Length: 231
Length: 80
Image 1 (cartoon, rainbow over the protein chains, first blue to last red):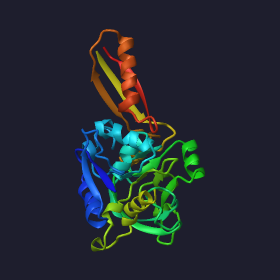
Image 2 (cartoon, helix red, strand yellow):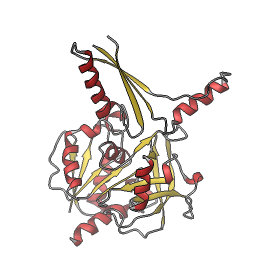
Image 3 (tube, rainbow over the protein chains, first blue to last red):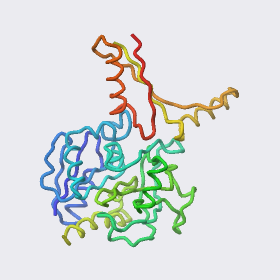
Image 4 (cartoon, each protein chain N blue to C red):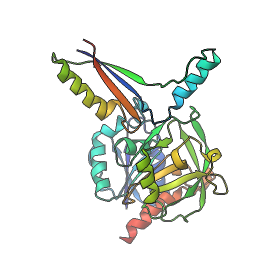
């Protein structure tokens, strides 16, 4: 099992993801520079958090034109697992691998704190080890996480159960007060129709081992290892 | 040729920045302001002499990169 971790100029969670894959899960993992097209025979690709290209123009807008994204797009379209975390999610949105867009947070501030999310879909490549309906706490750190999409897209996401995580309170209630950025329908993460491409604003990579005080995020990485081992 | 591309939040999309600016203007006493939408403007210098071709090219640039048409609209003006 080998992970490819894409590194854009400005990625800053790439080392965290590599550490999780190699040191915590015992998998192989390689960085892939954004100018490369070779995904190094990876079984899963992670687009890590950060500020690719300084978030110039719009978060993720320039990163999507990196040569590596052509390979990531082909990989995703072949049904293989791709996870976008925070800025990586923004890149997936700009690349059209997931629908919708993010705007600046409704409070116009960078929000950096823990949030609660309800796990809505456990059939994706990255969530199968969670319990559906369970509440997980993960950190966020972003300025543009205010997810939106045209009404018909939002309806399709709900109908096809492609909302993967939804912001909620500690008891699992989906309320405006529990929504840190104004995202439509409290959406924190979504999947494509096939469930192999998942993107979310919160950071499972920042809560993947006990020494960080929380290891709930580790299951996202373990889920894909588990899924691929079954094949 | 000089081209201006204006990119702005679509009218059916909430614009948090515009709302905050409108509130700030109201606090400054500009009570006649009903609404503000905050966008961006790009000043392009494009090679070519055919204004309609340059405009078409600029439109493509807006669609492909300058605007995210999920949340933003744009207009293009060749200014000389």
